[in-house]
Length: 343
Image (tube, rainbow, N blue to C red; front, side):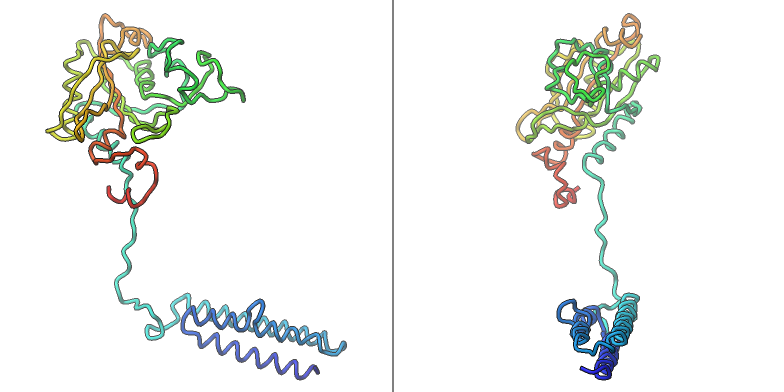
């Protein structure tokens, strides 16, 4: 093949490609033209490039320069057409989209049902006179166990029942060690921190995540939320505790909900009760409560002869499930948009 025939073929290719790119009315037509001329395997530019091998040795340099110039012009024509279509250069008559029609409704995100529940609980307890406080999720053994009157041999302190963290790169094996750190197993830690720094009276709630290595099932999850409540004053009694929990339950679950209190035991309250609500034909526990143990008051510097108080811890997930008829706690954490869009 002589040089002149090769140069003629390049000129024809440049004109045809530029014309087809300019005539493309939409992105599909432009892509088809791009593949026709610039396709990596069967594009026409690739076919012309192969013909360079047949040029005489003395013509290869000029042929190569001309080929590169052709390729640059073809790519420039493609970029110009792409910009034209991307910026709306196609007229309404040439486009399948009518820009005068209303836009498509956007899928706007929604607040997670757990967050909705937390905000609702804050509102209810705020109307009952409780202030919202927060505390750290990584705790020490003093705030998570010792100050709450939980002895060293109590099963609740077992390393297998808590998420202990490493200390100096080593796993914690002595749960009683003062340097031991763990993900808090209850929001009761916050009441200790508040009482350590606040003289009575105290009336607070704390809502947040807590962690326990429970196997996930319909009613348990290794990470869940609690609402901790605390009221300390000179004459707080069990009747007030029951009244607060009844007012709370009827405000959140409805005036027709049935509530019961069962005697129980917790190291940090004495006497202690568990509160249940009647749901779907059975009683469901939604939290524990009781009068603050005198040892807890002493641990934070309060005089149990002068002040008394009650504390309660309620499961946020169970309250959310009871209100919205959710039967499996795992549904709240599967991130299934079909489920979450119902709230």
